[in-house]
Image 1 (cartoon, rainbow, N blue to C red):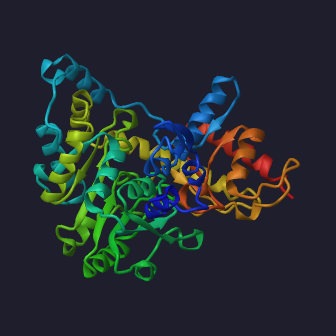
Image 2 (spheres, one colour):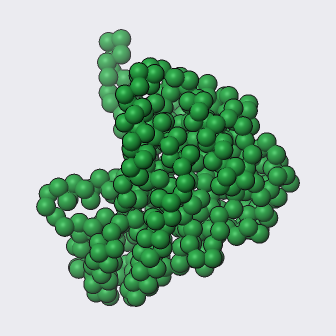
Image 3 (tube, rainbow, N blue to C red):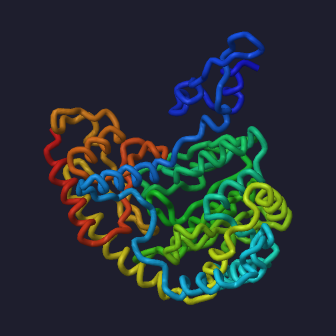
Length: 435
């Protein structure tokens, strides 16, 4: 199969952002003759760098060069990990038991605690044998799709979406089908939109509420309707519940797995300690699902990474076994910052920001600013506008292209109040000059 045909077979089509990577080949000597071969496989060449991490890295590099950059890119709480969790890790590091290999699927006591925590927080009943502890939530995402999908299987994904979902689906051989939403519906998709996107090849619905990047939260009624629709059509539901404890105002988190028992054993829950306990760097997530799915995903992990760091697992055990006072404190701060950010963004001419109900992101539309003259330039996309803002105002935002919907920015309000106000004020000062 020719290289171009192979790329097409994997779904890496011309015109995509990754086509330039596929085209990067080197000329090598092969048995005395000159041939053209790619150094990197088509499958891996087609993976994009995490846009959110890239923006955060660039902002940090500029800070290191003594530029007063304010970064709205990183998706992590600005609070330290609670002290009792850190102490649990210190104790674990001293215990020789944790200096050795442990079961690939996770420490038995942690799996039991995760099952208990899930019953406490969402009412979903699962046994410890249905839990797989992973190296952060991203590994749980990848292994869920790798376990469920065969080449050509379709996954319904509501856009805007988190940047890792497309890459995980693609690596598993799946086909992502976008269900595009916008600010007019609060970035929520209903049953009618989902049904319009469903085909005979649809196998999985990805359900994320609260959402990254929009902060959208489905009501219980909406969640039940979507879950029953998925059950009616025999779809699997992969639900990412990483932001379950970060909802505001009158919004409530509803686990689709609990609210729709009709889904039976066709639901996979993804979660982790990163957001609830401010443990992004500890890299502990998990997957909960039917026993056969968990066993298969555990087999994959046994070859990919073996066990998650034992010290981090014991820190996670302390986290999920404790109370939720730490996240309550963070939620109060995030709620205050959320209201401030939305108010200030909506004061900028050409910007419209719906009120996010969960997570810690705002997702304003900047479509009215595209093509306008600003500091002698006319940005033709939200990506170009974000680059201009970083250069001119020293403010880092993530453009909507990273989340499947050009014309928007994602701004995290998981940063100090003073920096938040200063950063959005800089945006206002700069963008108000657009003509």
